[in-house]
Image (tube, rainbow, N blue to C red):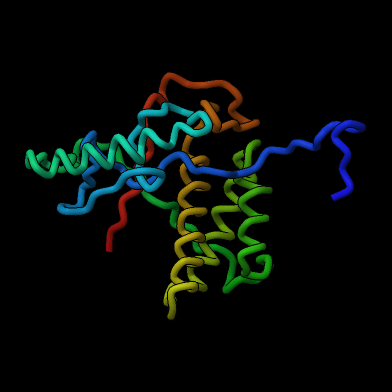
Length: 197
């Protein structure tokens, strides 16, 4: 690309390359849905704390996959969902049928997430992102094929991230809010969303 590393520094920039969080599991990879297991970056085991170091994803892939198999043999019971604190998605109506909302596309979703839910966050940006994502979610509520389902899932994941970051009124690990720049002892806990009918 015409870059001579002997003459000039290599440009470096942050990038989103993994997600902390995911499907809540117990130490054996079981979810609150009987028979459903999760491991790797799909799971939220909590073993990495508030920020995972690079390449440490192998812990969740290898160790927890093995634990799932071992736990299945031992008949471990799934975690009790009633013991967790649950949060609800805000009742955002979103904007009227996508009025004043950026054109719905994968690039628009990526740009929204980077600009409003990225490395440096604020309550105002997170609320705006959550509102836009709620509108987009309504626009894709009846996916018809696999790519459309995957896109709808990306919108849902984005909304969950925006809503969780909006609820968490502090900064901790990789989560930094300009309006709440310090960690709070009140937030030594996970945020769990549960889908209901």
